[in-house]
Length: 162
Image (cartoon, rainbow, N blue to C red; front, side, top):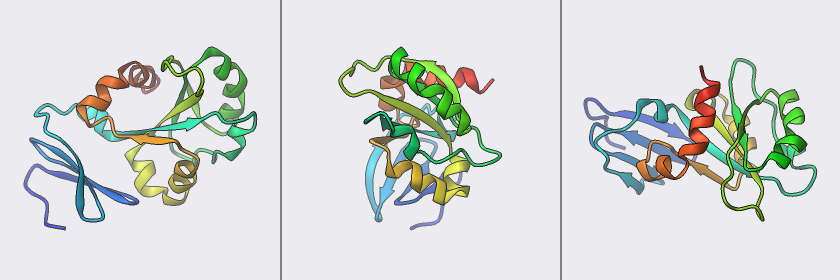
């Protein structure tokens, strides 16, 4: 990988490197660009976390989640009130902070979204791999279209951050 350009920030995520520059954001996977966002305005607050979606498959899905590491704050939102009622207490015991409910429009595929700070991704590799092993998807809100698509969910999580 080439050295950073002035004003550019690089973040390594297991399996990918995210390069955030002044005019573009690029995700590089195995040395090849995987996605590019050319938005000249990148919300700095959106760059400090990844949004992980975990499907609520079966009644025991929470049992497959790792506890939040000490010193980390990971918030969780649900796509239905029923799911929140069913899982919030168990997730609270694991150290997750409940952000609320933001329906995603897919009631046949219930799930929860976890906002994970970049510091937890980079400093808690084993925990991150355990979480992503049960995840359906990982979203980077640094990308404008992702941020727009998940705006309601991100706003819930932002409210938990103070």
